[in-house]
Image (cartoon, rainbow, N blue to C red):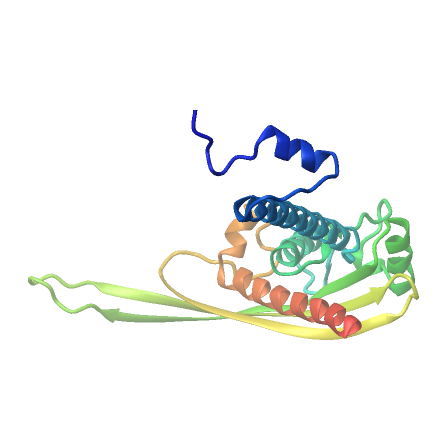
Length: 248
């Protein structure tokens, strides 16, 4: 049977395994060189993949943990769940747009968000093992409404009167961010979100906290809810920027 030119003989393999490298022709030398290069590339690729996996695991393990407290409601809406709802909405934004690891901080039984001060917030952060603590307040949530009526052009002799209901919403948030390790305040800022919508009749949310036992998702789809989300996105960017500055 004719020997395949790409295969080594048993004697050649035996010579290699026994530490004797007797190369009798150019083809064999090229074959050995190719095998060595294949081994080298394989080992290098495996080492690179392991290093990348180790780095990713390390980055995850050292990701900054952000504790978010329920928001205080300075609008006096009377909705007891409003602060927690807004806090969870911010948590979703942090997960979506940053590498921070957010979690909602549990407060002491019966404690309200507007009764917490910096010292209590930092203490909660230490107890619950986070690196940063965020305290937020809904300072303002207002809407401006207007109605405009008019007749649509006649089509095949038919016309109708249409009322356009316009709602413009503004939400202002106050935020304080604290470093749990040293107890220092990193920033205290205010952000404002705006949104407007034209609707043909129908109803909308014009008062913060008006969702009550209703679906909170419906509120987020309203102009005021969208203004709130815009403000929360701006606040989240400011928090993320502080971590970037700390590593520069």
